Length: 352
Image 1 (cartoon, rainbow, N blue to C red):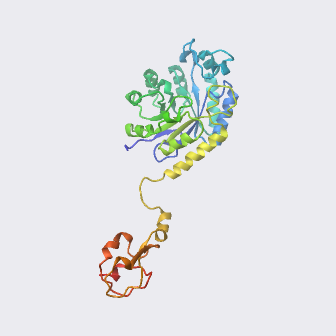
Image 2 (image 1 turned 60 degrees about the vertical axis):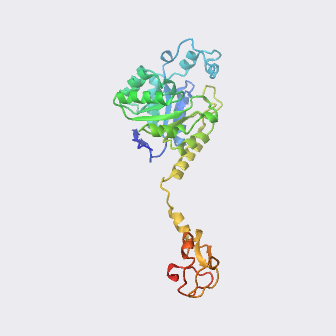
């Protein structure tokens, strides 16, 4: 596996050998309510997340006014199927973003946003946002990616709906602007994806393909898949987060509530410990167990000095005193140099 560089966001170092970076994706789960957004920040911090992320789009720059979707749009718009109306009601103003950034700083949690247009990117850059997120839908939006890359700030890029070749093109576009602080997230963009289409093995593929930290942006239900992604080596986990599954909105049902977010983070931290070292060698505890847990060659019966050892003269039993089992064939046929009691360990100095 190729060596990958780490990326620093705020006070956090993201990469192999560092704690998994957990992003509570608040997204649009504030429902357009700034106070609800603040509560999401507080709960994300209390749950143990490293960062909380929102979506920084401007509706008129994001979609055609006549675009329609079926992704729970009516719950937000009050009955229409206009995506523009939904996005407009979920839009955060620049003032909102500054207010949320201040609240996040007060709570001591990193705060950033997915960026969808150059105007909002410039504003976020002006308020010293610690990094940018490019959503899966904009993986092929190279003009936006290049514009964001020129900030020289870290870029987290999701790759849902993309091919490896499209990911390479996006990464190259960032590198061409002189920016190599890149984090790449495997993602399956469907909400929620079928289990067989999650393809966590792609994490390994990306680890081989890129010299950057590789993570996972999860759209599955529950916490099992993102915890498994950590076991696959994802160094950043992004998961949708809500205060309640019962709130109206497009993403609440497939998001984690505060209790579930805590469970996710606890599971990921456990996996970090369990991943441990890639070197296959006995642990300290195993070394202490080796004597009682392994076997050695003992006398199966009383053996007199001068006897030539036969297979029936020896047995292989615990503990690991005496000659090791792998050498049994090397002592059969050898002459015993002293009397050996039954059950006594047979040592090399006892045979010739």
